Amino acid sequence: MHHEIECKWKGKMEFEGMINGHSITIDATPAGGGENHGPSPKILLLLSAAGCTGMDVIPMLEKMRVPITGLNIRAVADGTDVDPKVYTMMKIIYEFSGNNLNEHREKLERAVSLSQEKYCGVSAMLSKAMEITTEIVIA
Amino acid sequence: MHHEIECKWKGKMEFEGMINGHSITIDATPAGGGENHGPSPKILLLLSAAGCTGMDVIPMLEKMRVPITGLNIRAVADGTDVDPKVYTMMKIIYEFSGNNLNEHREKLERAVSLSQEKYCGVSAMLSKAMEITTEIVIA
Image 1 (cartoon, rainbow over the protein chains, first blue to last red):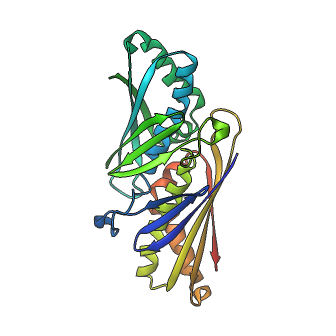
Image 2: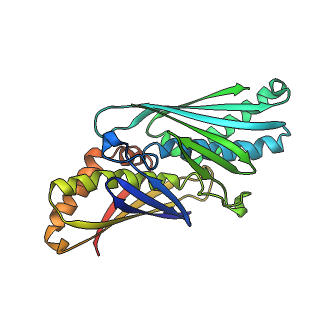
Image 3: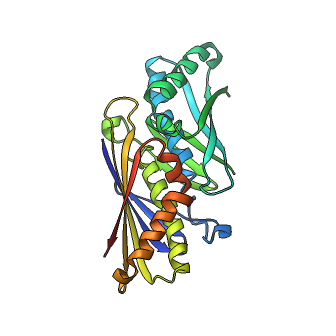
């Protein structure tokens, strides 16, 4: 696996990321000297973790024939307030919707566990730096 | 420090991330069952790392009165091809532009070192999972 990105300074604290042709603006908040034209860079780690496990769980549940109609993943992190400011814990909350999903709770739990323990590369990396916990909610 | 994001499934492998009001689409490539409507989640780690250190280096160089006019940060990572697919090394290449920057090379190196060793929370986290190296290029 080989990945590359570019991140170009646009002035003040704003940068434009280029990822395989996709542009993403990142910026600091006004308190941090920026203009809030995009998310701050650190919080992208949470989206990376949520998206990575989501892309594991969706095809697994399709194979398991679990009739989900929606998935909203929330990632919540707490961390230090001294430099370097790092996350020390992250909770990933999977909110599934669909008909009679309570009957499939074991499969939902299995898919989440398999992602966290076996497949999700982002969780495998970030778990070296912080505690990661999960929660399943059936909407 | 407390951070939260949401990541909502849009169908197939596409998710919409919501970060403090900013929307970011992530998706898999066609080879991964997606439609490439956005970057894949894992590679966001590289943008997170590049942006975080960029937001350290720019104000440091302003304080040091180094007359940079441009900064393009490239992040390049190599990793495993078996699950969980993780990065094992990342190189961050800082491409500075400006007049007579060669006279300020020591300050550029000091700003990069201070970011990597003291301030950049993303590098502090990711360095638990992979080797991080840096390179300075004066354009």
